[in-house]
Length: 484
Image 1 (cartoon, rainbow, N blue to C red):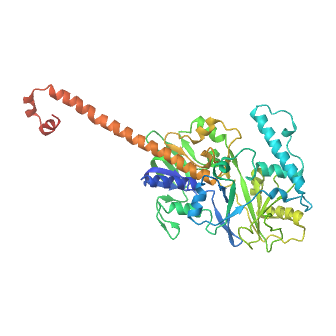
Image 2: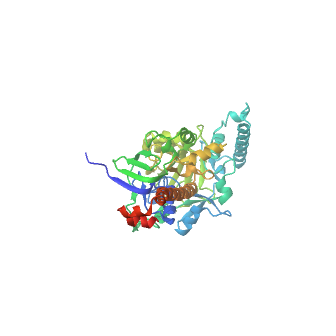
Image 3: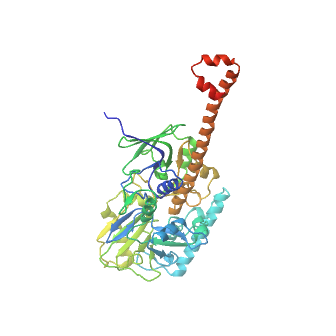
């Protein structure tokens, strides 16, 4: 059996998503070029992924730039501006006035507004009870019951359009959201970043420091460095590793094994963060049959089962004439449809659409169902911190373990779950690593100087005690003259 291939570098980056690519870029900008990036998939981007569908480019994962228009510039919006990325403004505010029941009737705006306000008040009451550690027995614990209440509750808690607590993204960067609608895809931002430090030709990264299809199976770490073994038996040795694997991968026992195992405080922090599954199902039609006015981009289906094909969007604003609808499912519903055939999902979706728009509408001619939960390189869509975050949890989730530095949107206290959270965590983690690399260099220099000075000092003290005539008898006359 041949010896496995060994590659040595200063820093090894596991994962080429937004945080991994950002980390590599920051290292390059600070003169650290001896870097290798290991990516399990056959492409960079991680949970930013485009696909051609129905004649246009659709985003299977991250699709919006959230947090625009405030006093501070969202760094991802800034990247989009530099790359002339095409985007469309998304306004969710009217969605709750486009709620259909199972007979195709739209709930009156007053009914929808009342249900929405009730849901917000219920959520606030629940938060107060949790804050006081006294859940109580009031009606807030029983949850919503009617189809419209279930739909509003889904929007309020599962969809990123309205949350009770102030969200740092909107407070810091602004309340506007823009849908990415560019044929080059959201991932174009990553390629533009990569080409500043990796050799790229005609839009393709040809730099050998980026290794695709490299699935990390084992990470061995010690005081002296790290050794990573991949599924194809290649071995990579480095002084440090930046681990940008998703929280879902870190929680999965099927992926990376650590030797020695991660300490308990780290594994507990990892297990205490939820992973959300967020699935956008794309349906292509021969022609559109849904309303396409300025306030009709988003519409809602009120079903007796919470989250059952609830939140819909048409793609006419992004791609006029595309005749594509998108329905978003989350968590349990996402996992359920991932386990069934696309044909079954299309059948369910068409039944819902016919309830809303009548039985004369055409069948979908194509369907696209992303499977983030069953993707072993992702195991979910984004992290979700508990409502009340323990300070220690935040510190532990992003704290390094020896020479292993952790990054990714799940390590961002303020912006977890967002693309800019992944970007900013890549910057923050790498700055911490650079500080550690500098400190280690200084320690080595001090130790080296001490190592040289101590024996020389002892030797010079001894020499001064020796009669001078004895020097002539030594074979190291030149050396002794030098130290005298």
